[in-house]
Length: 140
Image (cartoon, rainbow, N blue to C red; front, side, top):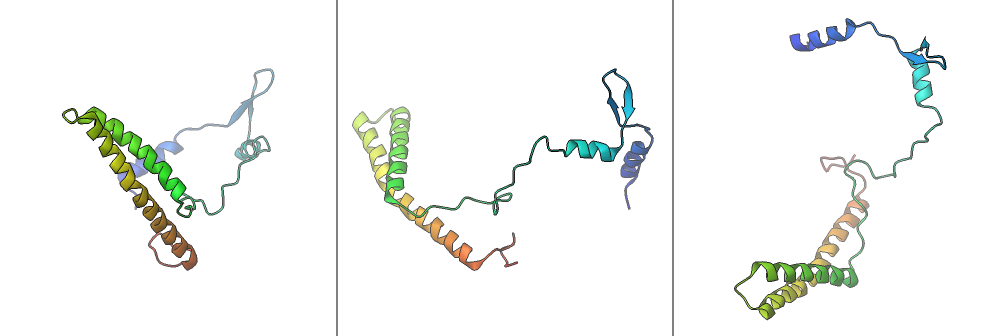
């Protein structure tokens, strides 16, 4: 059963008498029915785009198989970011040491990135082979 607040809120909507109106060229109000309004709204003015199949809310993109090229690109980007951060944050160390830290981080990040891509791709392949599942992880 609805609470007193919910009943009062619902009763409030029934207290107001309103009509759906449209205006003609002369500015006169013309009363229209809700069905006519819906037909006008759903008309062929804007065709709705179809959503991509299998890409519902929370759906992920299909991961790419691991590649060393992508891993080297990521390592280079992260190495550059770490070099800049180490130059800004590590004020007490010498510049070559700070650049070396960024280069070592990039060198370690490349194989880690490749391995992580492989883990994600293999998990996705396994999940796809098992078939669709519900949110709880159980087969539908």
